[in-house]
Image 1 (cartoon, rainbow over the protein chains, first blue to last red):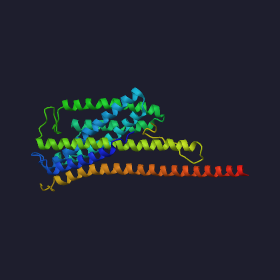
Image 2: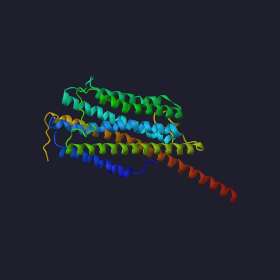
Image 3: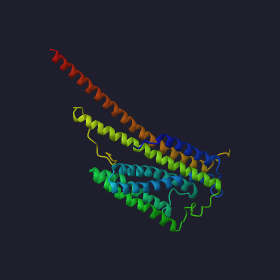
Image 4: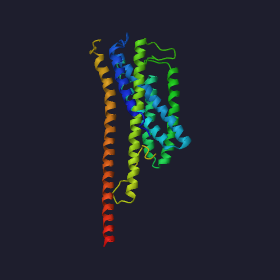
Length: 244
Length: 69
């Protein structure tokens, strides 16, 4: 169900990510202001954008799950949020490294962009413990969907609030008017963004396929164990959806 | 090809890109461990089915023997 298109997606991910890194180091010029350290921009910003989009995608799958009760949508929501958290860790760590090199500090607590992203990240860090705390699978899926929808709605609001706030240190490179990047930098950034987005979708599909295979195996094992005295362990309590 | 400026900025840029690569590698390693678990469970199921087939075969043979007697 989830494995369709996985091979071409994997190839596209490798081509785009490797291509983006090649463009970053061999095509895009060094920034006139920051110099070589600005190369982190092509990694940090796409990671952050894709992570935030992943959180919102989790909300959209949550809505679909509440609407039709399909467990596959709950699984998609769970996987999107799980991967967005991983990409979020990447955005936070790479941003912190960039901050140290540029501003001399690993973190600035009075910078709205940084703190708001951390708030969103910590909010979603509660998602997995919330799921784990609910034993009944139906209730777990419903509660997680509500959480994903509320969190997903919070992401664009948070983004707008940060845009309206006065930035102290964090630059505003991207804007509705096209930003201040020259063509070669913009092309590199767009390829990096596409690479991260495709990588995110590919990893989502990998995880979905793996979880689907585990679920099918578990169901088959249960069916076989019904009339066989083979020892099979019942399903452990888990934050991840256990059935489709 | 521009020379990579491995002065002050170089280690920071390298660290950021290494963090990304490490995250992906850790994720792939976790996925690989899950794949190994799935393969092991598949092996167990195959063994279970083989055992069942052997047992059914033995029962059939016993029934045939009883009928011929």
